[in-house]
Image (cartoon, rainbow over all chains, first blue to last red; front, side, top):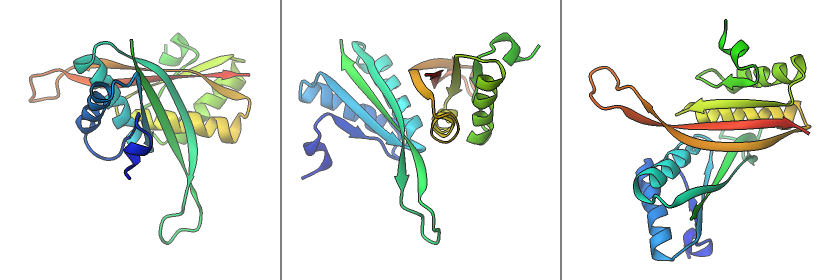
Length: 98
Length: 98
């Protein structure tokens, strides 16, 4: 069972180019008739999430609007060879169909 | 006349480490008795703005809350040797004292 099937309207943004996630947004809205889709990103992927939301909204789905943006902090396990947990910023962007 | 004196409660986030902007946030709130401070960032600095807001809020000014976050797109002049203008994502985070 994939992550996507557990949370149908959540897209986890990682290190791929923004267009990959733009496609995910378009697919979620057109395939499942979803009313809203949430992008979740951490650390450096936060940029990519903003890029994907903006590209989807400006170029492909003109009736999309940003419903909510939240930021937060998560504790991550230490990197190999380090002792301390790291704090990493997180962001969630919820897009909604007008 | 510096940028800061024109817009007293705006901090432009660039390529420096997040702590530089955390200091800016603390200074704005404590020096000028500001009720709110807005971080503005573009492109890859968007991460840094989120990091700075989170660090300020979690470690230094516990009475800060995120009042508003907006995202947008700006057109930038072409890089040298290129013809086309580039679109770049922008973000504004407004922090407010409770």
